Amino acid sequence: MHYELYIDLFFLINFLMDYFLLLMVGKMLKCRIRRLRIIAGAMVGAFLTCIFVVFLRGKIWRLVLFHGVMNMCLLKTGLGIKEKRTLIKAWILLYVSAFLLGGILNVFQPYVRGGAVFLILAFAGYHLCLGIWDLLAYFHKNMAGSCRARLYQNGRECEIYAIIDTGNRLRDSLTGRPVHVITGEIAEKLGCTDFSSKRVITYQSIGKENGTMPILMLDCLCCRCEKEEKWVEKPLVAVSERQKLSNVYDMILNPDDL
Picture 1 (cartoon, helix red, strand yellow):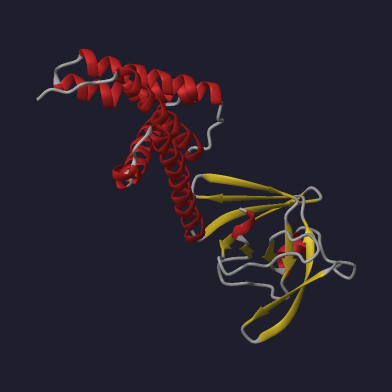
Picture 2: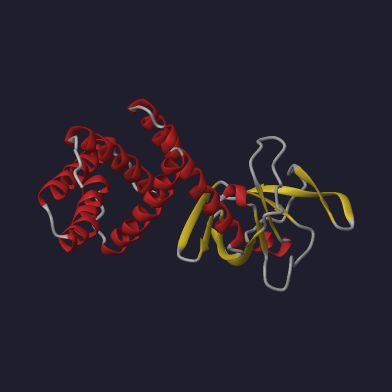
């Protein structure tokens, strides 16, 4: 069977795909995105693809060079990843991203009649894939459940167990910021005992339709879920009248602030 390969068009398509894939992987890994570096990485990937397709005939060599050497060069050049563990993670995410983006483009392939349409679909597919990833990350974060939290206030520090509650949607009416909930016992350990001058937040719960809790602004909050740490500067916390929220947790975290 005879094929005609337009190398300039082939290079351009691969360059665009590599560019979007590098952007996706970089945002998934929360790497520092440098546009010029992404462009350079995409050009390296597209160039190597053209070289391998034109000059390599052996299937085994193509398999090794395509999925090993070329993709590693693509990631190292485009994202500047040096750590081996992060590089392997990026390599896996590259294939996941390629699978999602390729599937989206394949669905609309019958409607592609020009380069401009392909570019628009690739751009839309890129944002759709990122949206899917953000949705999965959101559910993962909210389903993760418990974590350890460290609270800092006026030189004092308190480490407790906390729970990420998707039902906690408390927000300060003045600033609109998310509000966490701690117990009165934890507030005392942080030296917060006088709430007479503090503004309050209203809430509803089972058995209490219009409850109120005083709001404090702490110096800092650090949450450690699995192996990831999340720091929140000047978090707002409401102090519950209960001394214990449960037998395990002393704090209810608002997922909108994490």
